Amino acid sequence: MLRQSNQLKLLQKLSPQQIQMMKLLQIPTASLEERIQEELEENPALENELAQPEAGSEYDLDDHDKDGDESDFGEDGEEVELSDDTAEKIDFDDFLRSEDDGERGYDYGDDYHGGDSDRQVTPARIENNFHDYLIDQLGMLVLTEKEQVIAEQVIGSIDEDGYLRRELTALVDDLAFGRNLDCSEEEINAIIHKIQQFDPPGVCVWDLKECLILQLKRMTPSDHVAKAIIVLEKYYDEFIRKHYEKIQKLLGLNDADIKNIINIIIKLNPKPGSTFAVLNKAESYIIPDFFVFNNNSILELTLNSKNAPELRVSDGYKEMLRSYERNKSKDKKQKEAVMFIKQKLDAAKWFIDAIKQRQHTLLHTMQAILNFQKEFFLTGDESNLRPMILKDIANVTDLDVSTVSRVANSKFVQTEYGTYKLKYFFSEALQTDSGEEVSTREVKMLLGDMVANEDKHKPLSDEQLTEMLSEKGYNIARRTVAKYREQLNIPVARLRKEL
Image 1 (cartoon, rainbow, N blue to C red):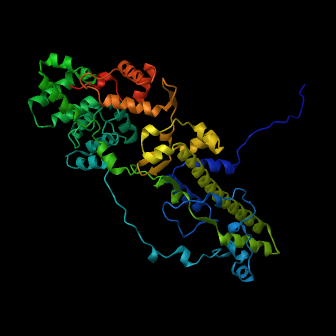
Image 2 (spheres, rainbow, N blue to C red):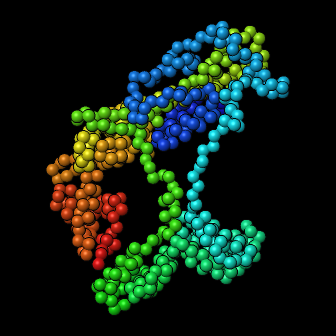
Image 3 (spheres, rainbow, N blue to C red):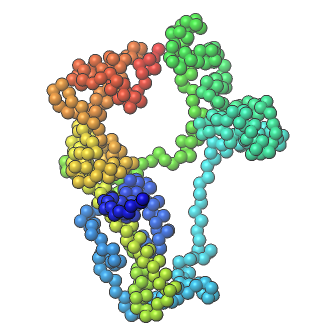
């Protein structure tokens, strides 16, 4: 028998405004401008003021209205009152008039829509990418119609590094199903060999070994180049493991010859298509979210002006809402339109409040980081970085750890010593023999210096690095040293060895 009962549960749910705030908080400045533009396009009740603050202008925390009256749509917290003249200018019935009545509806005028004669076209820069470069070279070959289709399919299967990522059997299937072309593996392989003669040298191959060999075959012939080809063809595994002594004995080479051969190979390009990727990608620049200035040992923090856009609620939409309140005859169609206007006004105000709250949280968190790592921002010396974790900043700011993590994610601060990612200032603590707590970043710096100053003919092993750190008062395990070495992208001792 089923029994019905009442239960009281306490559940924690996030409101749509809180979710929107969290999403805005974690995106960097470079993406914020795009996000604001999307909101401006989706919500006509939101406007961007023409007056923009200067770059690097400081945002006042006191300007943030934390209470935020949801029913108030006026600027500076004042209620908007319409004069009789304004009410006459906006005819609410005209706005609601549908296109079925033969009218265009609310008329924005020619100044809003603009004519074709007033449109200006901004010329766009066009650059050929890696695949276009290969297709252009394809035009210099004399091919049949079938070979042309095969060649285009092969080039389309080459990745940005220049490698062919589809096997012959897969290419046969691609041409059969995608191009309705029946061909054999031998026909495809013949086209691949022709494309391998294209520039840059080493393209259209399946692995690194073949890529390097193709580049060597395109070089000016010499005894050392011929020996380098033999090394890669017969002793590739020994080469990548840096077993140079074994290769030297097998080929009967002296020290000078093996050194010249190795130098020729290591100067080859393992990713022949990467040069085009670097030229065409505009992702190498960084837009800082904060600026820190040292004014006579007084640190001044400012927020990037792109984090503080001048947004406001549309006066036109507020006036339309007031016009409806003055209208005595209210039909169903008008009520639906008013609901739409109110939703857009609410969304605009919520978005503006979220942007202001984002600015407040960013500055509040960054100020705590600045105070915590004051010695570093004054001197720029990485050894002055104190151990700091997310919880330390969360305790100071009274924010949740997840909120601090969102602030630190993908955010940058520009100082007189360079531009740093906020996550750079967070590190675990490590206790020395004297009982002093130091940042693990300091240990990594010391580890990097040891490797940089080591004898490359006899590089230091992890055990030797552990002993050297222990002599300096840092008692850490060998596996920890190995972990720090990997985080610094330092290979093992065998791979650091040089002839």
